[in-house]
Image 1 (cartoon, helix red, strand yellow):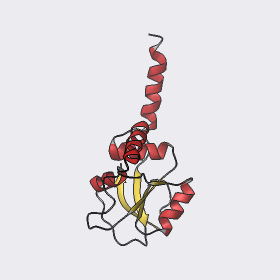
Image 2: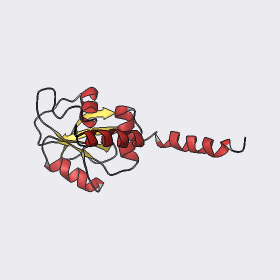
Image 3: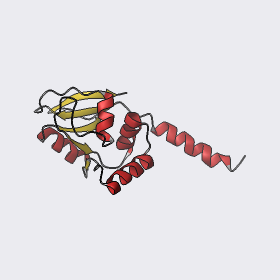
Image 4: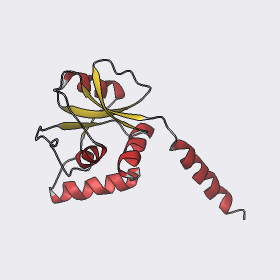
Length: 139
């Protein structure tokens, strides 16, 4: 029974870390009105599409590695950080797609999102959203 304790503790920590707040998918308030479904967001963030349903091309931004990014991908795609990394490695290796541009900091991501029309990103719901338009909420 003793060897199971570390595994149980790890499982409890992982379960508690996946209980973050709601994640917001956002774009600049300067962007033309965008309607985004969960399925479209998933296709965009998995490199299966680079345009919206109306044909509008969009770019994506990723937050730096961390709990918000991990939670976002898990809520949107059901994949953990290692699965996402392996997924994108395969796409890049085969030349089929490139991952979203990764910001070095949260502040940099917010600046890009505020300044760049048709750039889509995500934030924790507790982050300020002035200058941004909320497209989708991931509970």
